[in-house]
Length: 217
Ligand code: URA
Image (cartoon, rainbow, N blue to C red; front, top):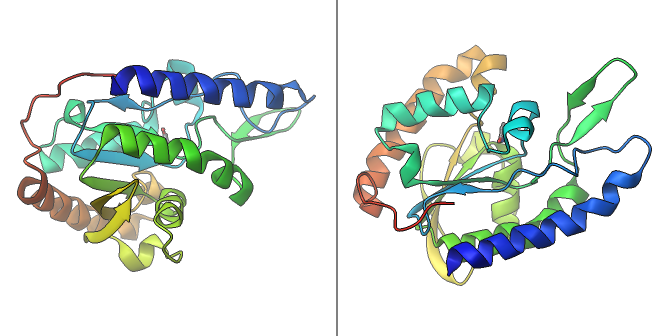
């Protein structure tokens, strides 16, 4: 039931994005959105920023380089990927196009705002107890959905915070984006500590580790 409802929502998003692709040099890979995937329902939902090139090619969130880093982090928590639901705030790859290349860009505030209703629906249907945000964009989005003031991952990372979201009491657990350590190696030990804290918290909070998913998307 959640599965068919989610698929319906994703189909609506595909329709919303289609006209955006009609510009000469569109600022996103609007015709190839990447939707959430994983266990349904799931006690833990991971939310990233937006797919990159590899995710767009494979239609799977976190399947490229950032996904490898995410797998490394998850291995440290001993939580199998299949026990989670993984999605992004913005469902298409935002890009800057030049004659020579197509590069990723950070989504604009307007793009994030336009993506919030679908993210809220995903949270409602996946019913996570813990929402793990990966970087500043998803943290900003989830705080906005909970009608809380914006804050940076630098301030909130590595510890749970209660919040009311999509009609239920849940927990927010902000992490740095898995790719942050590529650009700033001094973050690596902090990210490792945060991930260990998440692992310990999930075992306590969500009976998550080995509970079998009832359905997969
Ligand atoms: N970065 C993200 O935030 N999401 C992905 O799916 C891949 C990279």
